[in-house]
Image (cartoon, rainbow, N blue to C red; front, side):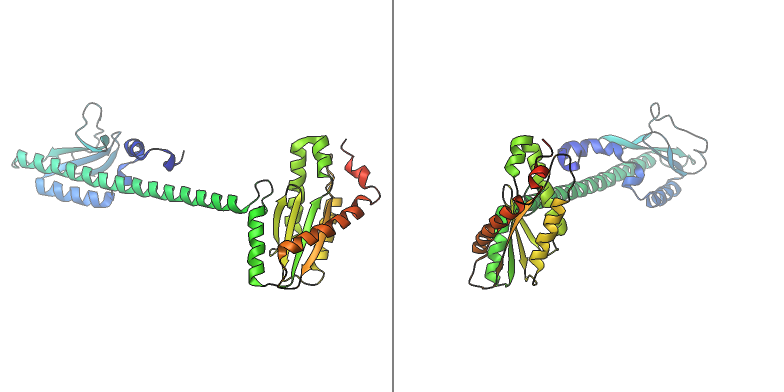
Length: 308
């Protein structure tokens, strides 16, 4: 579960159990401070973690000593009301003022607790904000993708494809190859094999389109079984070569049930006064001419019905 899915107050309360002394403090700095304290007060000092494992030992009094923190917790070092360490002292001089020693040692524990609290809250707050930012980025990316992509195929959806056409029109880019691609007998597949297989057929054709297209081709799903393709600044014969590759890939596709086949119509926009929307309508007309040719090819029907 991500940080952002847990309420901040609960995370702050619970996550301290995952922190050790070394997560909260620069132990070299703490050791130097305790050494100065021990020298000034003429005491030996032992700092353990929450389980009683030794972290810092100053002086000989604690050599070989392994505190049982449950029975003798010493001075508890607590952050977020949880014990993260134990501090023990032993006096090596009876001439020192006992009250002064206790006040300074207790003050040290209070200081360390406040420092640990600040470090802990800062670190957890930073992690929390980073997680929220990451979630926001992911959601923004997903929203952007959802606005642009057709969910079933991953190509541009109809709205985004139409917007791209308008942008190209305004840019007065010519020539532009405008291609209409229609899946042959998609309804036959849907009627005989159901929605799952007919959706799979659409995805197969979309994948072939993406694989055969150049990086600068713009592909959109503009109807259930219809795709539009734009090739800005298309070279002579580029669109026709794409159609040939696309139809060859479909015809050679091997599947026990499906026999992908497409009809393709191509129109070139060469006049900036034309609109790509009108060209796409003209390409649809050309597609129907190609569909008649493809569906009357010998062996077409047998291949289509092989899965029945």
